[in-house]
Image (cartoon, rainbow, N blue to C red; front, side):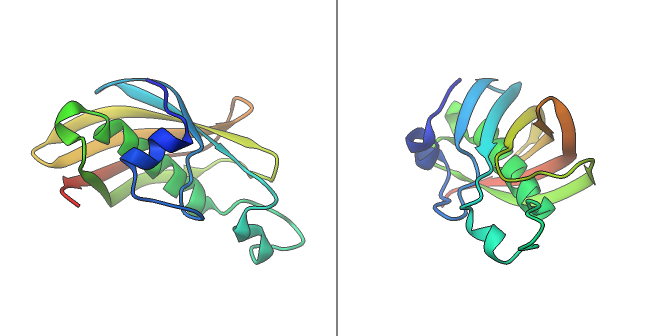
Length: 143
């Protein structure tokens, strides 16, 4: 499973500046997915978030992980054309800072799906160093 930015836009409703996944580089339906978010100094968030110490906000790392998790769930044949609404997060931890120039590698694993609720776990890395992790839930629905 690989998707470029145009293919991602066919799956997710998000658009600039809130589309926080640049590419999907690997994955297997109902198992796992690997996505990339390139952090750039030109990202709008750096204008106001710690202007003298450019740390990428943890909440946007979580949102990037959620978008990759949503792609994992929405890539299933029965979910094509639907949306994934982020409904829950637990056990979230931040283990390191993310800066402009970093490449966030996000690995999500499918946990289970019950009716229209999907569950996944996610880990975010910069240069093989774990920077964040969490478990997430999503409601799968029609747009």
